[in-house]
Length: 163
Image 1 (cartoon, rainbow, N blue to C red):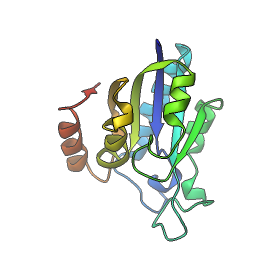
Image 2: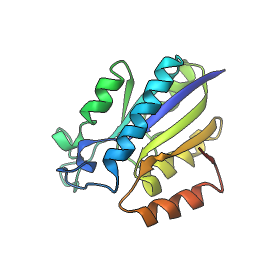
Image 3: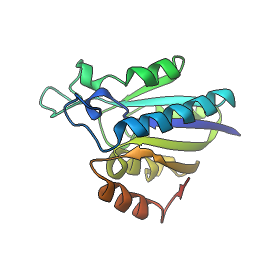
């Protein structure tokens, strides 16, 4: 294998202003991620968009809601991207992600997305992520505030490369 993929985790409407759970610097992170998508596409790399879907009782990302949809600017930037839907923090667990990566000959991942301390970290540290050279785009991630983001990045940086 010798392919690269950009994996964008949970850039969904509920995390942006007007959504049910807006995050710190969501718009700035979106801009960083859109630039990463443009670079990946220009290099011929795979772009995978991951979206979380909750049940009817979920506080946000309720199945079928506008809030659970991927941000429209992300979809416009990567219209051909594979979309993987998950129901857990780890984007590998219970999804087709590992099989999709294998089919495409991917051996290197660049992760970015929301929330740093939850879905990004759980995906980066997933047992199923072990075969990949994995990096996390620090400025392409966010969470509820600057301090929690910094704490999560500090802890994650002990295990994976932050770029």
